[in-house]
Image (cartoon, rainbow, N blue to C red; front, side, top):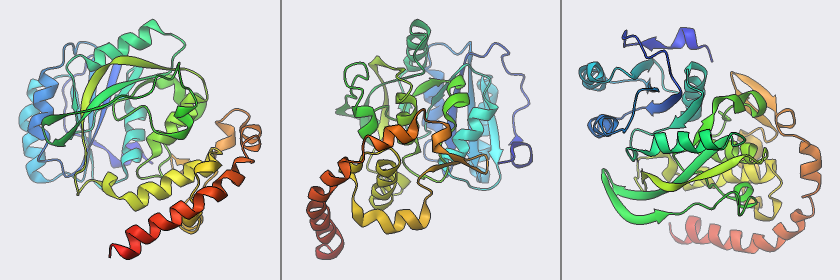
Amino acid sequence: MNIKKTLMYSSNKKMNSNIKITVITSLYNCINYLDGYFDNLTKLSNTNNIEVLLLHNLPSNIELSIINQKLPSYPFVKHIIIPKREGLYTTWNRGIMLANGEYLCIWNVDDIRTPDSIIDQAETLDKNQDAELTYGDFYYMFKYPTPSNVLVNNKDFLIDKRAFFRSHQIGCFPMWRKRIHNKIGYFDEQLKLVADFDFQIRVARTGCIIKTDKVIGYYLENVPNKLSSNLYMQTTERNVLYLRYGTFDLFNWLTIVPILKHYKIYSLLYNDKKNNISKQFDSYKVFIGKRLPLLLLSIFRQPRFILAYIKHNILNK
């Protein structure tokens, strides 16, 4: 990943030099959400110490026109053009490297953050100096920009740490300290859908995650053209993580062929380099070795996986 060669800046405004929080937003094919996104930026409760990085993949002329009209009203926003489309987590990693903030957070263009969410999460990290990441609860949206009444109540890390190794709990609005990347690396760019779950597991290994006990946003769910609707890819990638982190009792052996063909289980890919997981996960071999007996439990789950495969891939065709 060569930032200097692949990025161009469309805003020449001088940014606030006293940046504490960097908001990372990846854009691609986003025309339906731009007006709503900027409207919600206007509602943020405090932007004095915030910078927003709009990382724009393969922008259309219409998208550029809309953004260029809006930028003068948002001095804390920087528009970064990426001439070729790349993976979501590659874009996030670019944002991390460009960020000036001590705290980093995600705001997807088709989601909505509550006006106080960024400040609330920053206050959580301020008050808990040993914590590396904070998250919160959110509502689903099934049609943008209308929130539903379906609340996703994530588990509290301080009560149930084990859950953070087995399922995605930090949701779509995490905030974390930039410094954590020096210890555990970046998002795994070979993953298309679950690199944030992978990142969660590595942060959880530090034992330093804390919940901001508020609703912090609204997530657009069940939209056919979203990559996250690809259940086959999502299932395969989750099973990569079950192998990588020893959650063997949940492993679906039907996914082993595509995993071995397309993924490096024990490597993280970022900055165009393979990084061995054992170098960024303390006592990794010991951690995995203690979990090998769980392979026996996976045997008893396979009939259910086989029946599910027959139902969804044979009978429903």
